[in-house]
Image 1: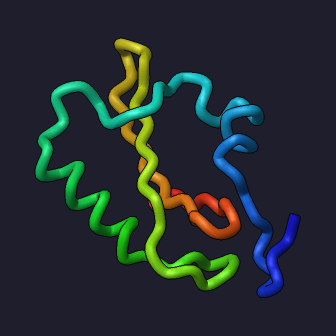
Image 2: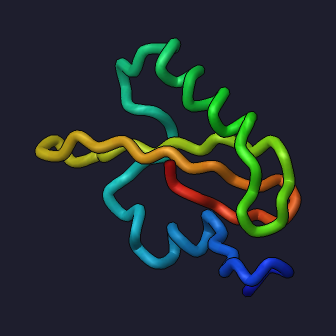
Image 3: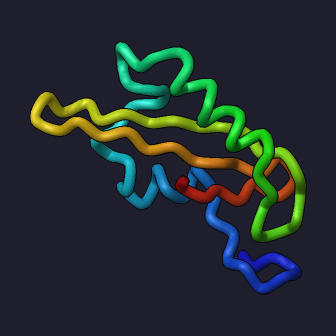
Length: 87
């Protein structure tokens, strides 16, 4: 699906189904500082969707579940069109 601005809309569901997040669980990493998570929430809340121009995005975080991998991935998710973007 493509937006009116020509941006390919990537939905969170699509990332999950594609296997891109197979080694991840929803939520920030255990032990993450609340202040760090709040910074990411604030970044999302002030972001503009590249697909539709909607101001203020939702914050979605994922952390690795494998003990040999420390990884944290944060996404904005547009409330209007559903487009996700990793930041």
